[in-house]
Amino acid sequence: MKHIDKYIVGRFLKTYLFSILILAFIIIVFDISEKIDDFTDDRASGASVWDIIIDYYLNFVPFLINQFNALFVFISVIFFTSKMASKSEIIAIFNSGVSFYRLLLTYVITAIGLFAVNLLMTFWVIPEANKVRIDFENKFIRNAPYFNKKNTHVQIDSNSYVYFHSFNIKRNTAYKFSLEKFDGQNLIYKLNASFAVWDSTDNLWTIKNYHVREIDGINEKLYSGNKLDTALNIQPRDFKSWLNDVQTMNQAELIDFIEREKFKGSSQVKEYEVEKHKRLAFPFASIILTIMGFSLASRKIRGGIGMHIGLGMLLCFTYILISQMAFVYVAQSDMNTILGVWIPNIIYTIITAILLYKAPK
Image (cartoon, rainbow, N blue to C red; front, side, top):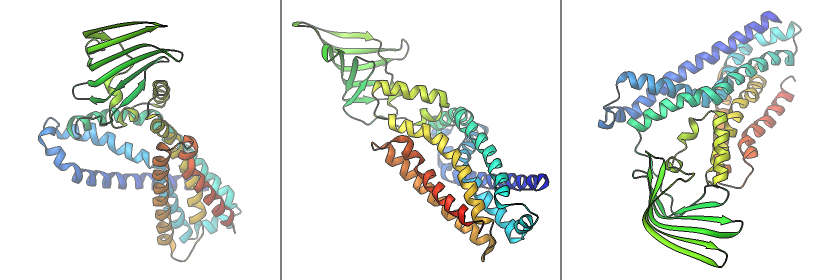
């Protein structure tokens, strides 16, 4: 089987790389046509053509390809296996004494190798590339970040809570600000202020027009002032409306970040956890889809390659649709995050098991 193994692996990787190159070209063409106005806008005047190529596209294309790597693997398996089946190469291999499952093993080992590379990219390489890409987007493409939530409550440590009515991220200012500290269930300190401004030089909050109430049993102390500088375990960057910061974190940083956000009582923890589990679920899908693709395409059918590719594309789009629906639903519900993120893989594992059972027959 050594020669056949090399042949299968070679066809697999060549088709996989070819499909990636074709898609990368299509992505660049469509993205340029969509963003041409942004690139020529006054806001992007500071970006040269070299900056656009190096800082944006050399980081954007790998990010997008890595996101859908499992689907490229699936399309590659469908395409080259169907082509082999149409030329009766698969039948010739079986007639030489090689079993269906022995041939499938070569596919699976290749898929595991691609899974390992994809996992390395997802956990460590792509987050570093995203730092450069997102920084470029924030400078030259996107509008300034905003925070549009009202009446926000945040836990900043085990006994302290911050509340503010609204936050202006351009001015780094929280309006109708309050700080509460507890001893167990008992309130021992409460501060109310007109607003609090972030001082980026000293990494402190400057609280303006404040009133403080300190409680010690039946004794209370009231005082007020015009200005108070204090350090709090919260910063303006915590209020950005998009999840770009998460995309720039490697897996270790993301896990640590989620733990800190849980401690603070952040309302976005579920979204961060979805991102964490997606980073494993999507790459793992390449193994499932490889087995599915081989089960579908190894049989010579009426309609040939066209039928196989059409069915493969339908399954691809269905997988993407189910995945996006699952991610959105689990982020907004009380459903277990791991189960919700892995639902598409579970569904496709069941479909693959059925196809694999029927394929040798």
